[in-house]
Image 1 (tube, rainbow, N blue to C red):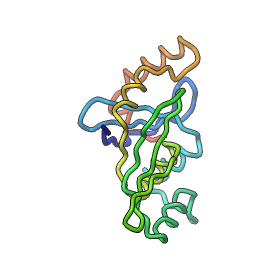
Image 2: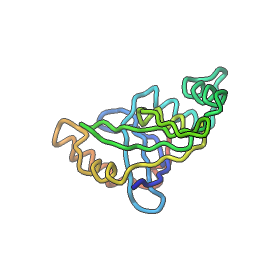
Image 3: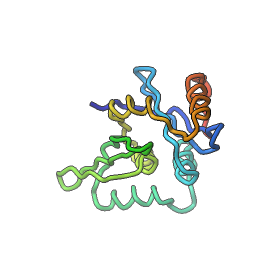
Length: 160
């Protein structure tokens, strides 16, 4: 089963200094942090802040190509977590059929934002993410979990 989640914020991990997309289920307290690269975070931040660029960026290009081909992005689903790596699928319709495209979650989210498509996460992924150690160092892992547990809802809305 999937849970629709919203982007609650884009932050910098205080330990690794890497960007984190914070997804939140508006109907519960479920939060899913996904670490992403700087370029992907920038693409997401540009769309969240509604900043237009003089020329199409890669995710804009993809959306434009799909539009020209009469394909429509229906939703994205973060559907797996293996060895601390999240996986996603972009669900599209084209010529009356459904097309599923494998994607990194950061790219899928950047495209979904541009297409105004919903973001879903498999419940199993949310459960497994809570028990996964996203760091290599135990003390770092404890500090990170404490930081995530103490996040103020006000802080979650802040974009890098």
